[in-house]
Length: 401
Image 1: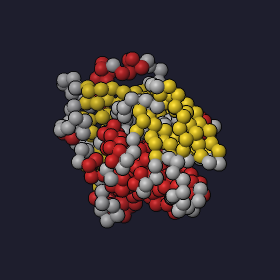
Image 2: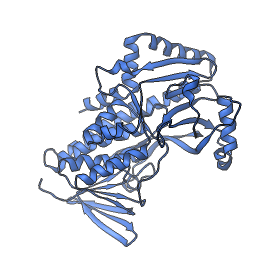
Image 3: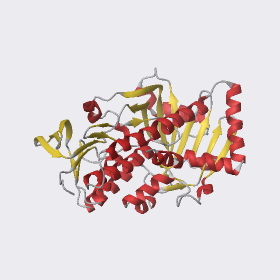
Image 4: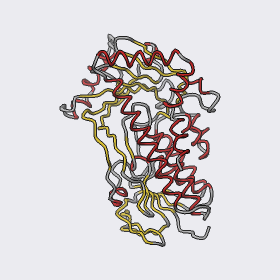
């Protein structure tokens, strides 16, 4: 490697740290800057698909991560009135992946593992460093950060923005964030009650013209874990009302009535977007993860897609920095991962929401019958699972040249 300038990475979430680990594993120096004083406590993402677990293995954290979460070998699509519509069996993927299951573990438990791995490889996360701006020229980049000790200027070879949906790096690149925002907010309620006693698998989606939803069993603080239930809410209601325990209780009793109140652990609401940056690269500036694309959570594609993109970018940046390939590899990263997001993540997550909330009785019946027919045919079910588990997305991206 002829240039020892480090790659500068803004954001110490899973995507930024995955890029950093990829680089460090082959001796490419990287500096990670995080605006917060510690790793953020993110309660949203937490469902991982088979190819993502394989990537975590490549990063050296897979087995430790698997030891702290929940394996989900089967998941359901249900109807409020119909009950179970289909129950998918991921063991059908046993011949193409070592991880034929979904895996549930909170995102905030993964980031420290990636941070520890980065440190073991000689790296260090610079907390309390808020990105201000950067410039670039033929020799590299110069970035400025606001720190407790004042403004700090750092030089590097490339700048990677892994700084979330409101990415300052993306704004600096002047790249449009194309797409839309769903009108409703999503309410997530954490409860102690065991929904498995009512026939729910550890991951389930509920189809209904009005009260659709999603369910995830999470490890929380250890056995017996916690169930997260997600519902859309009226956008006109004030946040304080939607976040209140009485509102959560009313919502839960409507979903699954019980004679005694639910044990509500937490409530959270957030707006959901379907957006993809018009480009992921401007010269020596690149973006990855939520800085490049965001989507609704139905299908669990967001964090998984971010890690797939981070692995792709990490490999290509490493090759360029080690003089094993030209900068054309970075354009290939953009082509591969933007296509994977537009053609799969966006399209499929939008489709998933539409199927769950379909209001036309005839279209709804057709959709549900198609799901039943797919489940009943082993080969069709396997093809469905290859797609819904993001295996086909990875394959499609890799085939782009």
